[in-house]
Length: 479
Image 1 (tube, one colour):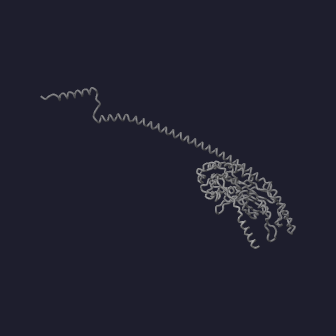
Image 2: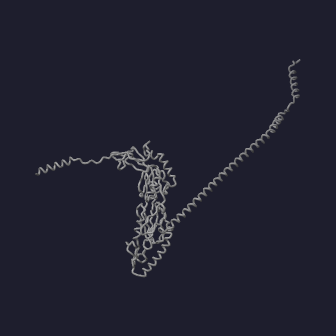
Image 3: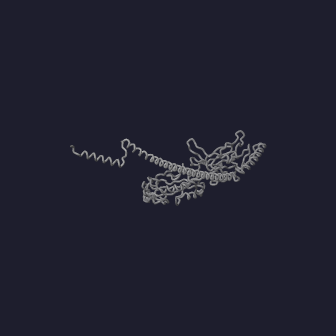
């Protein structure tokens, strides 16, 4: 029996060993899809970076003043060889052509999208279709592997600036990935383009633009959330549970009835949500004066998407009366003395009256400050444009006058040159006239110095006769 068992066990083991272990699925590399022009003469990273068509497209679209949704090119981020990188990254798409208008429309359709980066990217053509990267065994990334071009738009929830251009490419094996024609577009968050959400229990949002509240009165503290998403609901949740207690009496001394939610960017990127809590309900646009700061290391911090939210007066706790922290209804609780409770009620009514007056132009949906400011900004913009037009006209007029002056000066110069020429001619004529009598006098002097006078015909004839007679006498022989 024991022998049979051993034999059967051996047979089972051999049978199991004979069964084939399923092999790991083989990787099949293939050519990846692409949407940009090939750069293969030569197919190198250097040639890709120097490709003229990429430069021309980036420079052309880097001059546009505005795109759909108010996007505009970011200064110093046009035609770079680097892509934007930030933790506010949302997603990436591959447009049919290099056109930032396409990306702007997509960004407008993405909740919270505030900027996008369009660029050309050099990638390997033969890749693992599942990972879209070279497989080290089947299709490794080599330095001379064939490349293709991808046109991409990367979207971000923060309004990035030029300091976000930190991705200069990478290597997949020995294959070099690089970027070219990289442009960044962003829009300034405004009440119209980036409104804050409505939050239950609170009036608001009251838009403060790109500035945070700067006030000491009633300040209860600050809370920071390391997120690139604008979520003032996080601030609201904390505000409804935030109290300061009188340690001696155990009564509520301060209650959070207002908070300011905003995004703070470091060097134009790495945004974080900031919540500032206050016991003072009468804070508004006039107090939003904090635009940011520069730290000791030179890092620049800027404020974006700033809004204020207020608890309505019926949610306030009267002074010297406390309640449970979890009581969202804020029903006053008797503090033990009727006169103090009554005083609290009177102050509550007084606060309600003040807030109703204040809300007429500062709070929630009754707020009129934003449209007034908007109209005022429009008037100021119009006035500024008119002033610029007048300045241009004055500049043109000044240039025209200067040109006329130059022409007049030129004419005067030409006239002076003509006068000088005439004077030279006159002087020459005068010199010529003076030379003629001089020559005559010189001849006379020459004749006088030689003791000779000019002979007449008769004198010349007589002189020749005398000379002939003298010759004849010389020829006669002596006797």
